[in-house]
Image (cartoon, rainbow, N blue to C red; front, side, top):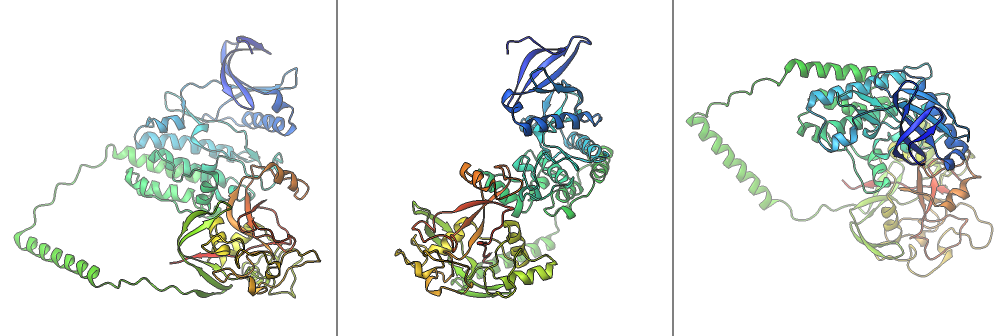
Length: 545
């Protein structure tokens, strides 16, 4: 719109930016106060969910009052039904730009910033209806020229009784999302503790603890990667502060610091020690030079060490360790897939993978029942007690992942599964390039059903894995962005209907319901992580140590 422009009692003076909403620097002429006015666009206003979330954000911020949380002065709807909110105008910069430009100061300055963020989160978590911010990141932290911070952007904040987003939906910025957010599980205040830990690492070191070129890579690191504390050590961070960061970012929620009051107290104690130490103790004087005798002994010891190392490299065995082609595991036999290149995808591109083991057969009902008994979990729906040797189905991706952890294995990656299925030569089917539907449990035009995990040995892969085609689709550990067609197809299958923002994972190999087709080993499908069906199962993989 042409500026300046009147919007209710506010005079819009400068456009500051926006996406689903337009943000303006404005003035309240009645009290001569500079404010920020945020107006939802016409397109977003036509979406009832977007409109409800916008107004809920306004109510959420208006319900809290804290020095380190942005103030909400006014909110409502204009004459055209567009929601708006009026907030305090902030001078300074967001924390992301300060970190990027190296303007966060020394360790004590960084601790003061972290302490204020922790105090703000402690306050919102202590409300009568505890609020979970769910999007803690440097872009949502404003720092004024005096070093005072303001927590902003409660757009996806959620109180315990708020049901604007469905169960299992994933919201948040990927780098700062807790594992339970990635998996679409119910979130608690502990997702804010995790995000704060990632933010604290970035504040202290200037870099994020994880990276990636895609959302899939980021999510994989969040779920499986260990936090590397070495950058904290290199940045001169005290051990107590490194430990606090590690405890905030524990993958299991129960292992994290459980309350922001404890986080704040820990930071306060460390800051107090730093302020008391000032610039730190004086450097120790250099040690005196060693005496002649000690010096000779040191030289002799060094010479002996060099000789031993040289002998090791001369006389060590040159042959590689012989890996077993087939190993026994508590949940079934595993076959070795040899390291090296293979031809992947429809374009048969060359991909190199290290050695790994993969289950020879799909995970059976018997193995899964043992897992449920030991972990005191309910059996899947319609679980066939009389078919122990059949593949377990009606499980979600998360169920499969938890079974793999219990079995001290993991789910195979997209490429590992494909190499295990088609060998190194990029064949069309596990048994070769000739279509032969009698070698797999696929739909051949009649009534079909699941078969035992040991069925169809004549259809084994070059690595001796069975039923890589047909029988049951198999989950692999590969995050996927759903297509519009997939979103539409699942609308009637899940309640609430899935969205593109929640985690979707890959299934491969087809099932007994599909006919044999020539791209069965290069194609895949995507399903929501919370989806289960009676023709989706899995098998596990394991690294070679």
